[in-house]
Amino acid sequence: MVSLAYVAAFFVTFKFVAPVQNMFFPVFASHASLLFLPSGVRVLSAWLLGWRSTIALAPGVFLIFYYVAGTGVFEQSRLMAMLIAVTVPAGTFHAIRLLKPNIFPQPDLNPCWPCVMVAGTVISIFGALLTNYVFGNPSNDFIVFLIGDFFGLFFLMMSLMFGFRAMRSRGF
Image (cartoon, rainbow, N blue to C red; front, top):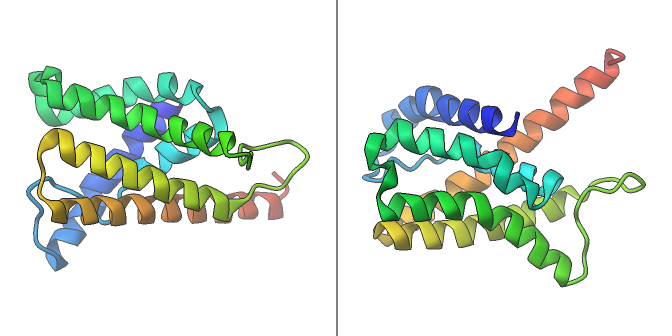
């Protein structure tokens, strides 16, 4: 399910969001999106599943990289970018837990949504830095990746919260 959500988020981003973005902003060489929904899937799956999210995300991440790069998916830079995409979110949540605030979901506590957003921002920073490094992208792409990851997570969280709220109000 996580990989399917990742693939769906990717196609929504690049088939619907990107064309609108390209009308108002220049096309970035890296095809970076200012609203990158797959980042939200990565962050929320790492928050919900911990290290298991790396396994849950791997097939979807590979499929998307294969869709974009074809057989070039096996180039070292792309393999490293896939590794970054699946490990940085879970690793960041576990590093935060080592600092003592356990922000993983717990049955007896309400989620700390601002904590998830802060963790998502940290994940975006590390992910963008590492991904730009392995691809050798210019520094302005870092800012676009960071913005896209943050707003992708924010938009996905808001959509899920409003969706769950609507379901609860209808008795689901």
